[in-house]
Image 1 (spheres, rainbow over the protein chains, first blue to last red):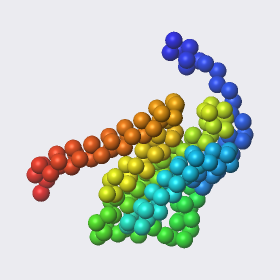
Image 2 (cartoon, chains in turn orange, yellow):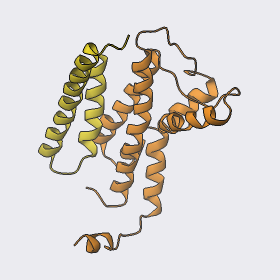
Image 3 (cartoon, chains in turn brown, blue):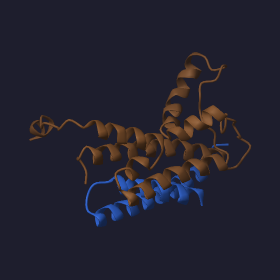
Image 4 (cartoon, chains in turn brown, blue):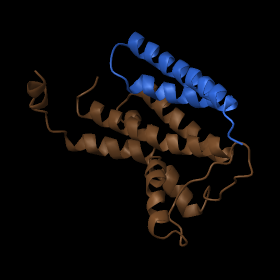
Length: 140
Length: 53
């Protein structure tokens, strides 16, 4: 039964599905919007945007490998960076404008802010996979 | 308040990307929201009684 399920042939995803995935990653909500899934775009995109902006507003900081990070310290940054990177152009925009990378540990909501920023990226990865599945016809 | 906001935004996403009928997804989203809050309160009280300082 399980072997049959594992060996079940999966239809190859069309190129448009990959494009939708990239769009969904780049701008949260865009992947669903382009497919006419307005409600999903509003809820998923709105949640990710809200989490990211609230995270920045309450003192969270984004991660990157700085010039002082060497060896293991640099390696330890990779996991949170990969989570932050999920926010797509929001993260890249902040990186280009050097916004949100300053630690504000003196603020009470600092840890909440970090969690919001990390989870915004991780949730956007989920939204990206959802947009891909819809475009590939694997989900209604 | 921040915990509730975090739980609600996360539950929205989990509920939307879940499989099943609309009703099942709404129930799943509510369950995720409630689980976040309950676990946070339980862990909070456990940490309160631990002599960490």
